[in-house]
Figure 1 (cartoon, rainbow, N blue to C red):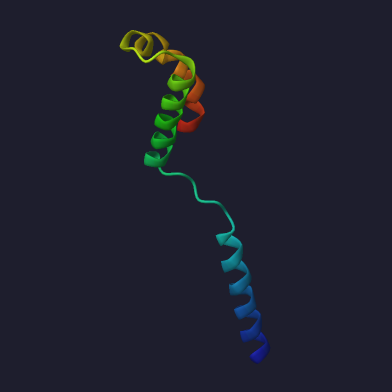
Figure 2: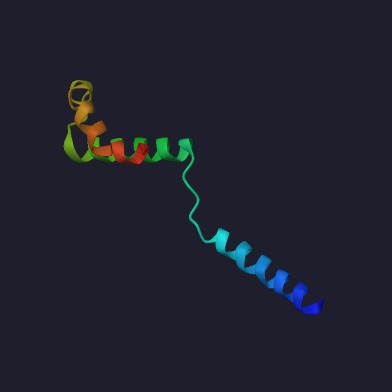
Length: 70
């Protein structure tokens, strides 16, 4: 009886710890925040600070940062 109880306790410990090792997936809000941060960094690095350049280059910036939404 003690061996069976010890076996089940050990099994529960091993399976419980094994499931915690996975990295949690990002929430939609975290993905969007990372995407927005990438856009800002891209614009700072690649454009001048004008409204016309922002609208002109927006598709390029979004294409460069789309991996953060996946």
